[in-house]
Image 1 (cartoon, rainbow, N blue to C red):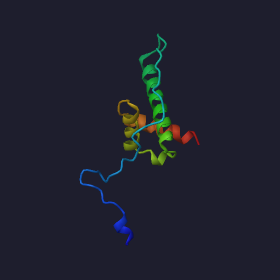
Image 2 (cartoon, one colour):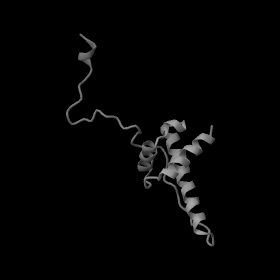
Image 3 (cartoon, rainbow, N blue to C red):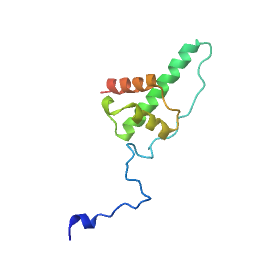
Image 4 (cartoon, one colour):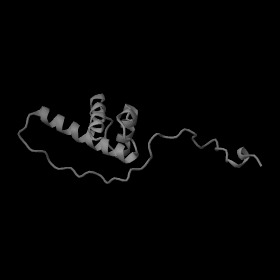
Length: 104
């Protein structure tokens, strides 16, 4: 019997396109703490952007994306959707790749 006859054909309802990232992550939700008061607004924006970039970089590493070249904007935004945060901006995506570059 030919090998092609042994492989099952996908049903019309099944999607043949594979998602680049798994649908589940092995990490727990992050507990949030209040930020210190009295800082300039820019400090809070930068701080939150760094935290988000760090969470996304960790999620990508958990998903098997180890090189910055593998972490395209679409991949990073897909990871953001999986961990339940808003889609990152281009600046945050750049920061994620920078974090991955310096962790080698």
